[in-house]
Image 1 (tube, chains in turn purple, cyan):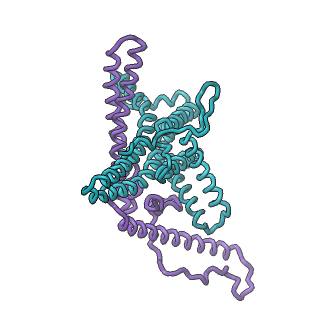
Image 2 (tube, rainbow over the protein chains, first blue to last red; image 1 turned 45 degrees about the vertical axis):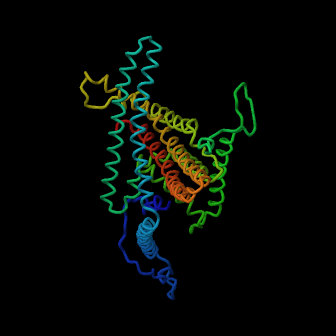
Image 3 (cartoon, rainbow over the protein chains, first blue to last red; image 1 turned 180 degrees about the vertical axis):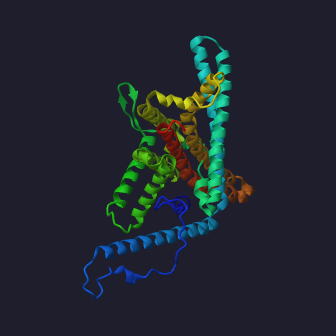
Length: 170
Length: 247
């Protein structure tokens, strides 16, 4: 399941951040605070802020590296495991979503109609009316769901390969 | 052929009558309890150390939390975070319940529409309560789309209301139908294996449905996660409409 979870933005919430900075091993000598080596210079405010800024830039570099690594991981693993199964499951989810939206709306509309008819004794007129309204509502639901999916697929294409997760949304 | 529906049967474990209602402790209730306990224990043990460099368990817990967090943030922005406990509990419960059902001999709680409908109605009522509490009667603007000529407004409003009432139905049916269909399919292919084995020369064909059953099980693992995700995602979207009914 990491395929869906580690989409590279789980850490910082900034989508699509792929920091292309160096992949070389970090320079551990920088771990020591400036001023701790030799010179007894007090840790001044500037030294501290410089260190914090340095830490921040290294952190974001590491985050970028991790995002890239997990992306590479994901591509490898999704190549190894059966990609057809994943696609099939996602396609099934899309299909079921559309079908259930339409059917549920028709059923709810028809149900309301039958209920009102029983109550008011006007069978079958309100049933017919609400059945049609339910059908319209179902088409509306499907169009809305489809619009959302299309938007997500478009967004996924823009993001490049980072769209596995986005396109999985219903 | 073994009955593919038998796996969904409810048995009473501890019969109990409360005020004339049948409130027995059933196998379904047992698996719900197991799902809740597993989730609670998982988070208790994984978050016990709370180290800066997470252990494997802790990073699993963090991945789960961040996953739902991002979902909320994407749909509602920061003010959606007040729903985090609710949405996260829903996600973990459905996911663990779906996964428990895949264990041989397990019971799939979410393959019963009573359970999924209860969850969907919980979401529906939450949306109504939050919507009316935050926006009062302005929440009803949800049913009156802007820019519609007055003479078709009653029709459009009726359609919007029906569309709104459809939500708990499709929300619950989708989860229930997916779990039910998947488990029945696996069972049917398993049944084919047994039948072929007892059919003389044709028993050489028995590995074919077995392979299919294995492939279906792999697919069901994906579906278990995907359906928990879809249910949670839709919950987020419905809640976001309660917070911001104007769009």
